View 1 (cartoon, helix red, strand yellow):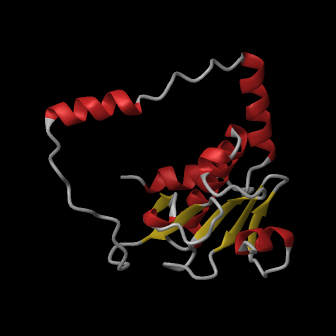
View 2 (cartoon, helix red, strand yellow):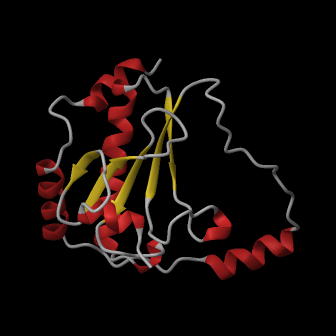
View 3 (tube, rainbow, N blue to C red):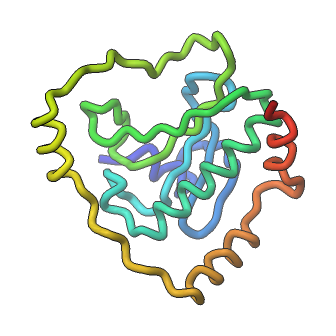
Amino acid sequence: MTCVICDYVSGKAKARKLYEDEDILAVLNPTPAVFGHSLILPKKHFVLMQQAPEETVKRMFFVAQQISGILFEAVGAEGTNLLVNEGFVAGQKHAHSLVHVIPRKKDDGLSFEWPQKQIPEESMNRILELLKVPEAPKETKAKKEEALKIEEKTELSKEDFRLKHLRRIP
């Protein structure tokens, strides 16, 4: 069984590439929800994000952050959704982990709203205990400096779109 996402990575399937490095590929979604809908893909095959190394996940979200900002200028987005569907019951269409970057405009016809529920206090406390994430190991100063250097080298736009975005915020 072939993976269409892996076919984008290998070049077997046509992909409109927005960004590529040794671990990550960003493409326009061939079946978009809206104009500019993009996909951030790990080049290695992982069905779920939990299977990917931490550095790969960090890179995916770094690239998603960059493309999200660029979409404000490129398509006049008023907001963006970053969406991860893990498991077919959650809407995952392909057995390959990815991040959707969806530019949003007022009255674009998309809705990610769901009915809110009231959960009993006892149940909330129980799920809190079950879901607590262990503390992440402390990064060394050298590791943080190295990560900053990598980020500086991989800017997706020569203009600083973040400053342009800040100027638009009332």
